[in-house]
Image 1: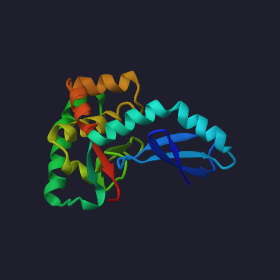
Image 2: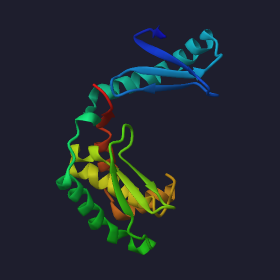
Image 3: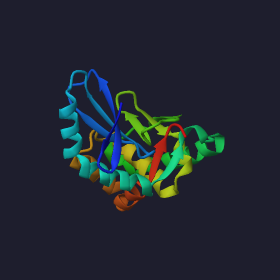
Image 4: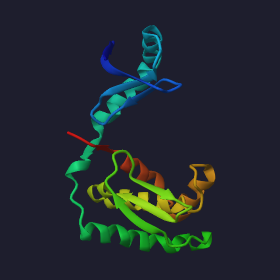
Length: 183
């Protein structure tokens, strides 16, 4: 069901969840997920209380360049480029005794990469071939750093900064892009 809150509309999705959440999609759509029996008044109050946050995120989404996941062409050339980045930055993790991970590639709808330290695998989004080199570097270093620290703690970001001192600029650049799974 679609509702209106002053200058934006939002869709309410009732699910088996404990807490209400708001999501702003790359299409600039607002989705509110609520518990199954949540009263409409409570939903309206929640959205009204979060309306400033929603407006800020809607404005940010309008500035982002959207990458449509289904339009990505990814072949051997793109795979080799990303593998070369991993090989280039892996030696910087030698002081942390990081073993060479297995690298996988997938089309992902909401992530640029993921790491499974237990299995020693890093999965990179095929959409990385659509962003500038510094964004690719940041994602590769970020995921390699997860082989040292599995969370996003201060210790994790110290590892990232030791390997890539200008990581904040690269991360900021990556945030200019949004993944979208359908047009």
